[in-house]
Length: 491
Image 1 (cartoon, rainbow, N blue to C red):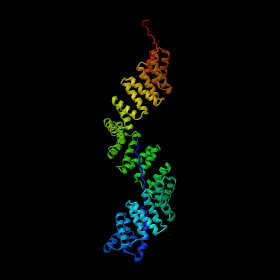
Image 2 (cartoon, rainbow, N blue to C red; image 1 turned 120 degrees about the vertical axis):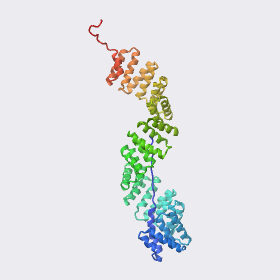
Image 3 (tube, rainbow, N blue to C red; image 1 turned 180 degrees about the vertical axis):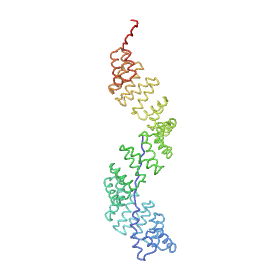
Image 4 (spheres, rainbow, N blue to C red; image 1 turned 90 degrees about the vertical axis):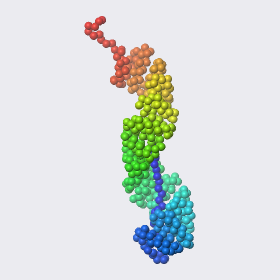
């Protein structure tokens, strides 16, 4: 069954907001410490905004108050409000490197990377070798998909700044997107070392290590992320995917279930829970998970197929077949649904429908051995032996070592009265699977038709050696056993 995949990535820029405050302090300090600056230093940002907003209302032409208000609004991630105030300040002839930097950050927050680049490049003209400006410029370049420039800007900031976890994180993600996975992992490991309590950095490290093919490293990083924040849905999903790929379905399921509990409307969590429940034979729970996935995405054919099979296997036959039929209606090329539908029809004794399903499956994938054998079996049951032979021949072409296909072909030839062809196929089945008791018995029957009685009896005995309970072989052999005459019976 096809498995939905989930991945996510994050890049951070908000860490730089704190770096700008020192510059803003130095710019305002010449006029003395204002009340809003004092409040800001105490961490009372909302109060500071209230005070400086009043000041701007009283003196709209004061560029210093507007710059401060813009800066404080950046702290609250009110990028639109910050941009308004900083733009007004510039219109009032205020211009400085820190204001350019803050304008750039406001544009980044508003996803206007091109405008951010203009401001940040100007900030670097005014203030050379400024680590904070290079950092934000890297983020703006990243946002506009200029990866080489982003990497260069981050690396320049790295040379100029003290060790910074957020910088290493963003550098690592830019390197990863450029395809430089080894360097990316190195940078992200530094981010985790610098800030071991960041679940986000641990997640990003896992994400890139998985891209680099280091499954063990990725698993460890995602586990660390969840140890720091057990409510990370993306980490649960990423870890579940890794565990499932390594064959650890039970543990993978626990993470898919955790993700579905944390975020019930997450399609991937519900769908993949259903997939693994089905693999484990827990069809009632699989049906519940697939039903939740269908509620999220009613038109997903793979989900309807999974739901149909789970319902069928859990005893809801009619509903199961209906869901499978809906799946192939929505996606006629969905092989798994046709295969499951063929099995369901066959079990229900709906041979005509099963023939259509298996035939469609073989048109979609002529290499489906089970479909070819089942199609042969259905033709044989309906006594269309010529079509049965054709289906079994197709199965042998798919896998010449299929004893079931050779055995089925032998049965069909026998019913067509082609004894020599039947004998040849039974012999092939026995060569492939020397433990196939039914093939020995049927071979004996065909040999009898050619009056090769001793050889036939040998085949019956061989069938009984393999399966002492084989009623057909026992009955066939008993026909050749001379029963003693009871005492007093006529001579």
